[in-house]
Image (cartoon, rainbow, N blue to C red; front, side, top):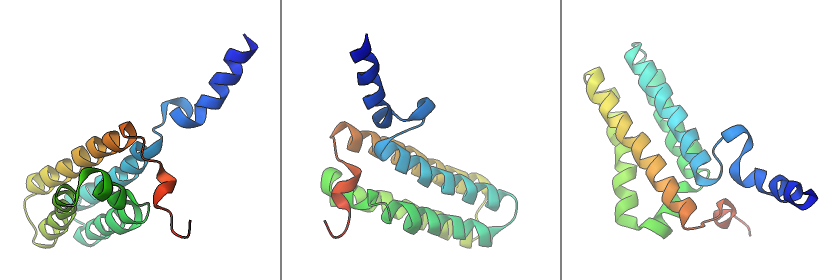
Length: 135
């Protein structure tokens, strides 16, 4: 019984506390938070803040936390480019004042891609630290 408790204790960081996502899924959810904020800002009439949120999703999370690099290595450059393009599509849709439903549809494609690809990276066992600089 004592060993079962110790084993569970050692596994908690891998599965996250209280059901929170871990690994690449946690990174994907951080991107999704920014995409959600962009969509909400746009629908509320604040295109400037919406664009900022898209930029922070891409550069502040997706690239900075090396999900883009992990995807490129594991899922291929072509696939990753297609996903990256969706961030640009969302920013341009906001900039061009497209209908809210169109902006929401593009945002949803990013949410789906982030979660799908994070799951693939986690299933492949790609560690978050593998893409850190100066290792």
